[in-house]
Length: 215
Image (tube, rainbow, N blue to C red):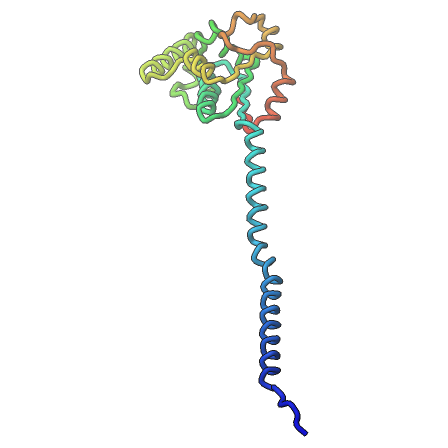
């Protein structure tokens, strides 16, 4: 009786092909399983970039930095600091407000600002003994010497500094209570000065400012 011969080689080949296909499938599955780990850094970078963009937008919405100065003194030497600081900050892009109250209001007074004096008494840096500083006419002499030094060094005058600051959009504010106390009118001040400002507005301005200075 004759039987057909078996074909073990063909069976082995089919089994081998199946094993290869299974191995390829496992590798592809492994690659698929690992792919999220490669995408995680890209996701974090995208989140960081979005956060940075959001912070930059918030800074743009806040506008420029703000400086608020309170000027309370009206002598020649104390008139320069608030004016110089205001114009310098404005040059650096700051939004600057200077609130003048009590004797500091004379800095904005168009006539009084030209006659600001300097006191010899109580200033330890003045090379004048106190006994001599109290003599009549010493304050006038000290003021004259200071103005001469300002002129010799080509330092800007008070009215020049005010004009420059106004051109740089510095806002000078005149305290309403002090105006009433001193009997000043709006016409007494330099053109461009904001008059009628109260203490509440000054406090709110300081609260909103990045830098606050009392001079």
